[in-house]
Length: 230
Image (cartoon, rainbow, N blue to C red):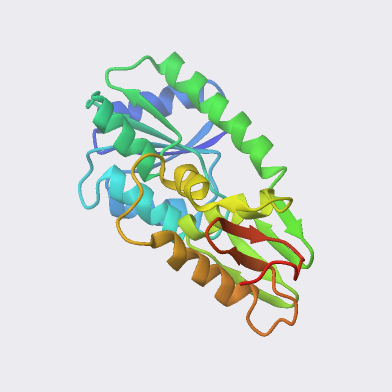
């Protein structure tokens, strides 16, 4: 594995790097969040080990910016922190971390977690394309194509479109989409409508066949059908 370690504690970073390298893996290192984000965006790593408390930019903000700005292969993130409350763990995972390890930790456990993340990422990256009619979506890069047109969607918008494409056989209720995307804490206002508008603005603009359908009083559907009224 090629692993990026973003950790401001030199002793911890050195211990992780030496252990991983002794097991045949290669490592890269950043001591603050700003440099860490730059390396994560510029290079392709099999996994990222990310400390929560960092100078320059903390781990939560780094995760959010990585999800927003990355257009390459997404590397799974293992977040390290001394904070172990449920709220802290939820915050880390919500920001984009794939796993969470509380300090102090075993290097053997850290490596085992990284190997699991790598296997999951490999399976994910080998099944990253969704398509319906002439609309295709790369789940890894969030690149969406319709005919000869291409765009990159923001993370939440991409998740909504992915869910709709996976369910082209049916109308998906609004509350189901909101539950899938935001869990039990949806944002204030009609955020879903705004995301659907942005999806429709790309998918259906200048196309004679509309794929994004609003089923009034129920929800939305992405499909090659003109049976449903907007």
